[in-house]
Amino acid sequence: MGRPEGSGPKPFQPLGLFVSGGLYSPPEGFVLKTWLSTDVPPADNRYWIADGDEIWKDPSGRTPEDQRMAALKAYPDPPPAEAALPIRAPAPPPTFDEIFAQLQTLVGLDSVKADLTALYDAAYSIAEITRAGGTVEEMPTLHMAFLGNPGTGKTTVARLCGAMFRQMGFLRSDAFVEVDRGSLVGSYIGKTEENLKAKVASAIDGVLFIDEAHALFKKESPRDFGGDAVNLLVKAMEDNRQRLVVILAGYSDEMHEFLDSNSGLRSRIGRIVEFPDYNTEDLIKVFQQFAGKTGWVLDESGMEALTKTVKTLHETRDRHFGNAREMRRLLDRVRERHGRRLRTEGAADPRIITGSDIPEKL
Image 1 (cartoon, rainbow, N blue to C red):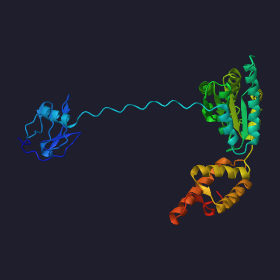
Image 2 (image 1 turned 180 degrees about the horizontal axis):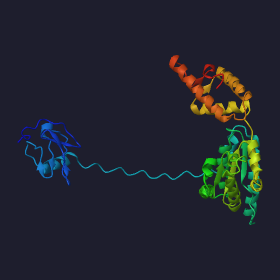
Image 3 (image 1 turned 180 degrees about the vertical axis):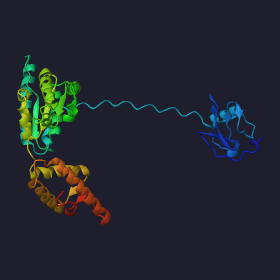
Image 4 (image 1 turned 45 degrees about the vertical axis):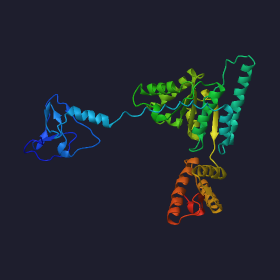
C-alpha cells in the first residue's frame, strides 16, 4: 500500500510532518516514533506513526516494531570502554632551593635579590632556633612594598616570594590573590568593606598582591571610598599578620606618598624593595630569553640591529617605559617582519633572525 491518494513526494522533515500537501500539526500528547536503518530505503517508503494513525506506510508490510528491532540488530553493542588511565599523582611543589634558583635566574634585579636573600637569612635564623628546640613567638613582618616602573618583575617576584614563604613554613597555602583599586573600592557605603573582606578571606594563609596600590587613595577626592579601603587594609594587615602576606606594588614616587597617607600603613610594612629600570644590557638579555623561547637565534647582523634599537628605546624612555614589556612588544614586531621575509624571500634556516628583521623603533 503506497502513500495516501493525492499526496505528492515530500522532503524528509525531522522536526515536522508533511501530510496531504501541508505541515502536520500534532495534537496535545503527540508521540513521534521513527525508525533507523543502515540501509535507508527511498524517501517514498519512510513513515511516521502519529497518535496511533499511520501517516505514511511502508509498502514492505513491516510494522514499526519490526523496523525498530532491525535497527537495533544493525547496531551491535559497542565494545567495552578501555580501562581509564590511572590518575597521575600531582607533581611535588618546588623546594626552597629550586624557588631561590628561579629568583637568581631573573635578569638584573641585583638589589631585589639582595633584599630577598636577607629575608631568607632571617628565616634561616628562625628555622635553626626551632630545630634546636627553641620557641619563636615573634615572627618577622612579611608585608612588603614593591616600588618601580612597569615591567620590572614586581608581580613575578611577588609570586616567588609567596612560594618561598610557603616553603619556609610562614604560610600554609599557595594562594596568590592579585587585585587592584577596581577590585576593592566600592561605589557606595559598605561595598568597599565587603570587597576587601572577601579578598582577604580568599588570600588567607597566602599572599594578597595589590597592584598600583597607590591608586587606592586619592587625596584630591576626600569623599572617595579609597580612604576606607586603606583603613580597612591596615587593620587586616595587623589582625592577620601571622596568616597573610600583603604585597603593595606601584610607581616609586606615588607609593612613597601612599605609604605616608595613613599613619599606620608604613609601620606595617616590613620591607620596601626598589625595582630599578633595566639597563640596555639587561633589556637585550630579556629579549634574547624571549627569542630563545620562540625558537630563534640571532645572527651577527641581528645582534647589531637589536643592540642599536634597544639602546635607542632605553635612552628615550620616560617613567611609563614598560621595560620587559617593551621587549615583548619588540618581539611581536620582529615576528611580523621575520614572517614577511620568509614569505617573500624564503630562507635556508627559518630560525635565524637577521638585522632586517629588527625594526629601528617601536
